[in-house]
Image 1 (tube, rainbow, N blue to C red):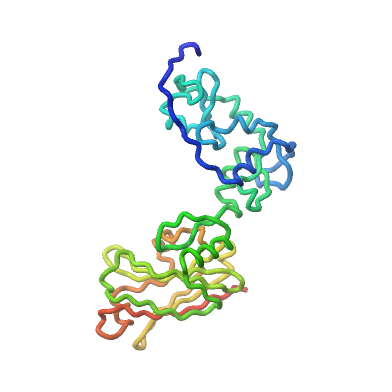
Image 2: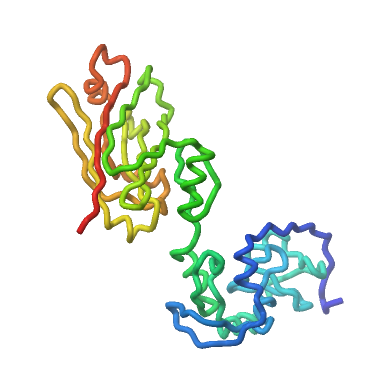
Length: 304
C-alpha cells in the first residue's frame, strides 16, 4: 500500500478501437533514432519502448502535459484523470495531484512518425510537435462532404468519391459547365431544405455543388456554392461562377471553391456563395410564384 494512500472503488474502463494506421505509427519499436527539425523529416525514428510508457492505460492515446501519476507511480493523461474520478485504474488508489515531471521530460527527447503514416505521411516529429502537425497533416482523412445527413465516413478522395456514388447515390457529371434546375412544390416549407449534392469531374479533380434553403436572420434565402475535394492550397488554383435569372434580370456570383476541409455548415454560414432572397427566387420562378423553379448555370475554370 502506498504511504497515506486510500483505496477507492473499482472503475471499469473501455478501450476505444484504434485505426490500423494509429497502431503502426505509434507502436513500432524496432527503429533507431535520427535527428529531426520541427517541420518534420523523412527517416527512421526512436523509441526503444519508451513511447509505450507514454500511452495512457485508459484511452490508449499518447499523453501530453500534464501527465498525472498515483502514489505508486502509475500514470495516465489529464483527460482520463477526470473520467476515472481521480482513482488510479491500475492500483485503485487516489491519484491526488501528482505530476510525472520525469516522464514529461523524457518525452521531449522522443521523435515519432505522424499517425497518418499508413496514409502516406512519412515525416518524423519531436514528441511535442507531433500533435500539432497531425491536426493539419496533408494526409489526414477527409470528412464526407454530403450535406443531406450527418455522415461519419472519412477517407481519402478516391474513397469518398466511391462512397458518394455508391452510398449516397449523388449525381456524378463529367465536365466543367453545368445547367441545373431546382424545384420545390411548396417554397414555404423550408426546414433547412437541402437538394441532392452534385459532383463534377473537372480537370481531373472533383467539385461538389450544393444548393439549399435556410433562415438567414429573419429572412428565408436560397444558396448555391461549390466545394473542392482536396486541400485549400489546391482549391485556390480554381475559380467558378454561378448565375440565376429570368424575365430579363439575373444574379451572378464568382468565387473560389472552398475545400471540403471546411465543413458544409461553415461555408454556408460564411455566406460564401450565390445567395438568392426568397422573393427574388419566386420572381425568377415565374408563374403564380407558388412553386420554386430555379435554373442555375455555372462553370469551373483553372487559374493560370
